[in-house]
Structure formats: structure tokens, C-alpha cells
Image (cartoon, rainbow, N blue to C red; front, side, top):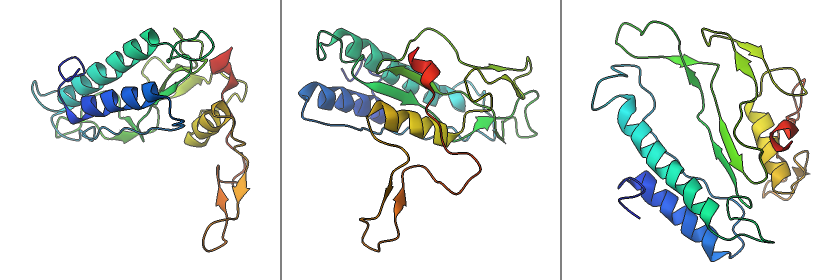
Length: 195
């Protein structure tokens, strides 16, 4: 497994996640992180830049998906059918020419991979302009860009949790909003993923 998943701490975390899910002891949420994507300099250098992180991500996530798809899940499904997989970063990268340090800077258009858990796979929702600078077609009922709050609402909904909940059982009694409610729009589940 260590070699198959890429012989890295990220690969080991993917193996651990697979094993925790296989143990079927009621785990509802697993988070794995992979740093090293902040490539403001030399992003395309042959043995550093984006390549080590990309290789780790490909080996870890690719084999996690393959293993979950081959493992029995509940009610005749596979473990991948029972597991919502979300691969997301915090921001995109500038498009076009590289910056002066041969890297890319922070940008607001980016992609998220969502699969398993009842998601109808093999397709992309939304479309960017040909230069990838702007959203041309949002690809979902809200007809606007997808925000982090929308992805969080989708995850909560897939887990059967009411994403509009505000809990008041925190130690200071201030309340905890699952999705921040002080904005013009509230996070909305991306139901198109499941149709």
C-alpha cells in the first residue's frame, strides 16, 4: 500500500482513511491535507514546484478512489458509493503568463473534485471562459459562482445534517453557525451533482 499510494505522508493518510472507512465504526468525516501548492516561484521546475504535490495527489486520491470502488459498502453498494470525496484548495492560480519569479499567484477561479457518495460522475458542472479567467456558465440552479459555503452546504446535506443549523451549546453560548448566515446569500447545496 505504501508504494501504491505514493510512499508519502499524504499517501499514508489516504491509506489510513481507507482503513478507517473499511473498519465501519461510524466515522462520519475524515480530513486529509496536502500542503505545498503555494507556487509563487518556479512553478514548473522539473523536480520541484507543482510536480511533487501533483504526483502525491494523483497517487493518493487515485488509489483511494480505486480501492473504495472495489470495497463492499452498504446495501449492495461500494464503499465509494457510501463515501463523499471532496478535493479542494483554498484558491486558484493566475492564468496566462507566469509572474516575474516564474510562478503563479492567487486567483479566484478554481476547480473542485467531488465524487462518490451518490454523485453522478464523469462530468463537469460549469464552464470557464476560454482563457480560464472568468466563469462563463455556472452550471447549476443558482446561476452564480459556487462558493466555499455552497460546498460546505453540499457536504452537510450529503451527511444528512441541516446546514442552516445554529448551535448554541458552545462553552461561551455565542452560537455556532454551520454556514455563516450574515451574508446576502446563504450557502446552497449543489444538487446538480447528484442528478
